[in-house]
Amino acid sequence: MVQTAGFTRRRLYVGVIYALWAAIAGALGLPALAYLFFPPKARRENEWVDLGDVSRLAPDSPVEMTFRHNRVDGWKVTSEKSGAWVVRATGGAVTAFGPQCTHLGCAYHWEEGKGEFICPCHNSVFGMDGRVISGPAPRPLDRYESRMNGSHLMLGRLIQPERKS
Image 1: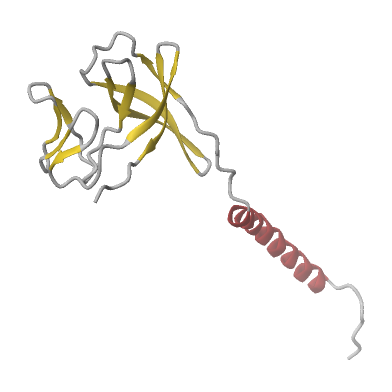
Image 2: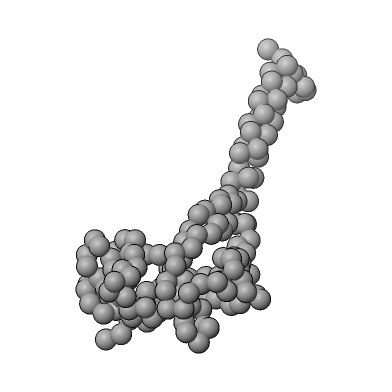
């Protein structure tokens, strides 16, 4: 039997199948490699959120205020509702505390009669300045970076104070 060294229908089909496999591998593999080796650029700039006008807050009377901020998770941007306890001191200085207890992250509240922040879950008690008065909380309340823009309070990132021994 004589074999012809040339282009056959069988070779054409095999070549087309290999080309299809290569196209599928490229279509699936290139985005996967891009995802692994070139993650999205994380935003390094600190986003400041306008909490609102604090000029009418009564001195030494904490108020819980809510705001919305964007959270970036990879390529997904989610708008989240968050809160802060805002304290305006007699001298005019304004402090914003994170809304979670530093023990296990429970929500705490302001007890007007006692003049303290109280976490009802595990009985942690905090002063108006955020320091731990009693309870299992290991550190003072977390504070937001804050700055004033006229009479509006701007909040930055949440800062965890150092644990005192």
